Amino acid sequence: MNKKTVRDIDLKGKKVLVRCDFNVPYDENRVITDNRRIVAALPTINYLLENNCKVILCSHLGRPKGEVKPEFSLDIVAKELSRLLGKEVILAKDVVGPDAVAKAEALGEGEVMLLENVRFEAGEEQNDEELSKKLASLAEVYVNDAFGTAHRAHSSTTGVASFLPAVSGFLIEKELNFMGDAIANPVRPFMAILGGKKVSDKIGVIDSLLEKVDTLLIGGAMAYTFFKAMGYNVGDSICEEDKLDLAREIMDKAKAKGVKLMLPVDTRIGKEFSADTESKVVKCDEMPDGWEGFDIGPETIAAYVEELKNAKTIIWNGPLGVFEFEQFAVGTNEIAKALADIDAVKVVGGGDSAAAIEKAGLADKFTHISTGGGASLEFLEGKKLPGIEALQDK
Ligand code: AMP
Image (cartoon, rainbow, N blue to C red; front, top):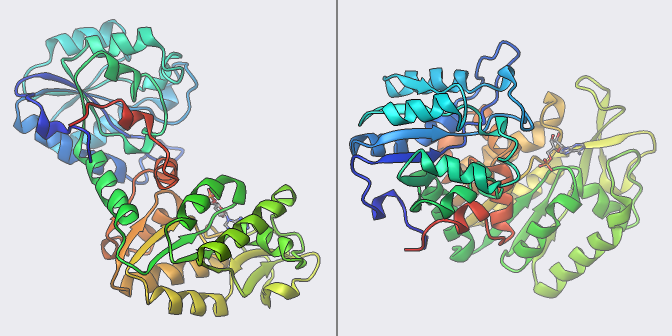
């Protein structure tokens, strides 16, 4: 990585503003259901504490859309972080208002405070300069460690970096090193598994991966657009009618580049979109009307696993079926299990595929599981992430 990190700057005893990604899921009782994003921020926070910094953390949580809404308060994060650090985390009542300013002013060395949800400020998502300046005025150094929002140019992820010495934390460094390495210097054969809903969402990443991979394996609802383009009946499956030409172009490009493009050969179909709907497996070119494809079938799983066994580098982004419903989670789970036993560099883009791997308890069998779904997708597309571009070069 060519950006400075916390190691490359003198921050001993300084007041440091750290943008974290504490956008954790929580239930209706406001109990955090998955604390991984908070845990992922600990290495940077601990490093700053070891250097006697005065640590001011900030993050967004959910989409309060520029308004103060108590249900989006970071109080739940302050509590969990406090538990993980074994020390008090002071929560400011506002972002850059009088309470935050007073608490930041009074903060001592080795103390940690957390600003309220940055998206309580209307200026945050507009990358408002005034807000960026106010955030900067709280501290002497800015550290971005929020990989999950690095693809957004907001005040707390990008704007603030114009007004303070700005470096990355350890999480962003780790994300870029693992994903960057896998893409830039893959040990071959290099294979990518892409699933999820829409071809249109993934076109950028498909395009960029076709330049690099040896095999591209497609699953999820995306596959049915390809089938339609090939002239198959797809029943009521999700299919982007306006992307049929695009699907054909992708297939042609794969051929031209010598990339092996693998599509499912069989699919588990259901009568309707529900967990306990009637289901059966059919060949992909024999889909009946009135049914929807919700998962890859057993023959496809076997064929994909056989292919993946030869890989030395694997990137996976997006579930291969409706993994939220048990009977259609088989493809995603079986591929996750098979990957666990394959000896290769295995990098998983965040979001649903990461959740499926965590749920199966297989996370430690992977080289790297990204904390950022959208950010990792944009990174794989080869796009510049504004939150990282804004940091100082080495
Ligand atoms: P994405 O955000 O594009 O990665 O898509 C993830 C979503 O795609 C998950 O919520 C899955 O349930 C959904 N999905 C995957 N396969 C299918 C399918 N065959 N039909 C409908 N939805 C699907």
